[in-house]
Length: 488
Ligand code: SF4
Ligand code: FE
Figure 1 (tube, rainbow, N blue to C red):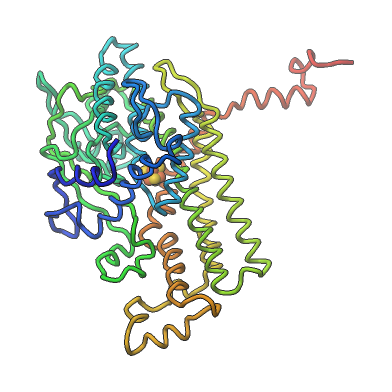
Figure 2: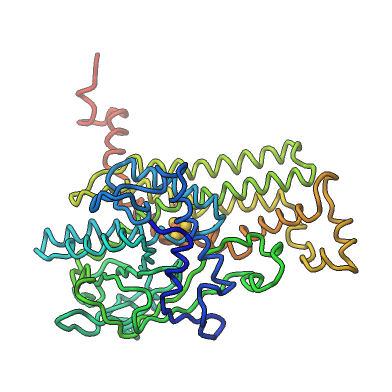
């Protein structure tokens, strides 16, 4: 397994084409806006080195028998699934943001099943190719970006009927040794912190869309790939010299648009090619795993609840009954989220490929809760924090020879706590609930791993309504449903 330092050095060897604020970056690794997001990924390497987190952060490869980082592991048991949820909570709490590496783990696990199932139907050899690729990822301890979301253009039209055929990524050429693809993937978490990009289709497809039914993996610096960084609110605070106003100066997340401008993919790295009837399955399996992965938000919730309690203490308000009750409510919501991601893992099962898969209904219910509860937890944290969270002067003012004394004097809370500490904890709450980390804690909770409606569709499909009606009719004494349990 790589150390965090080896991970960062390995990124230096990549030749990525990255644009940010309209300019090409010459040094991605040391860019001040990107670096915190890289540090968050580096944490997935750092914790895997620590003995106390060994069970959670590492696993035994079913291919090599070696100890590997859990982010490259194919789940071999229910315990593996449960440990994955625990790992994501732990990392959310240690970074306070999106640590990005789960998309690749979820893509690998989904592909381990779908390639197996395609081969069973068509006699192809995708699974063998995939396992060779997986071995490479495990041996090198790589970060993979799981790229699913196409730009999608007009949502009422399927891929082949879009005015611009590239609005969904598709195959534009085929050679004996591979394929050529064109299109883009939007909102890609951790894109420029990744060694590899794993591309999957974004929706179920019909025969007319067969050129869009394609899955493959390429090194992230493959010719023809361009990254355009997404903005986050308050991102330019990362360019400031001071650290207090950043809220969380160490860690962050990032998203980017990844453009594939006629990219060649060697056949060895193609895992689905025009088997459109498996596109929906791959989407559903990746999405269900990633909905489980939103255990990460429970960890960020831990940070936010801790920050709210600290802010209350610094204000001298921690004993007020309404403050205590708000903290209870935050914990109730956060632990309810935890129940969901543990439950869908504990109810997991073995698929024909041997991979363990989460309970999809519970994974979707969990993610649906994630689209709501963090907003309420954030509202309560802002309530407890008070207005100073958004009106407090800058770090430069706090340290100014002229006005620093006024900031120190008038923003002091309880006498035993420095003004600086009070402002630091408020900036952290600001960062998570409305600053750059709010992308990860709030908007990503809403739209990441599929928007709320996507989960509602799955819930309506998966809830066994016939069984529910049967038990109701039986107890109501409706003919034909209850006779066998009449003990009289
Ligand atoms: Fe992982 Fe959560 Fe970020 Fe998705 S949003 S990549 S699950 S940390
Ligand atoms: Fe996400």
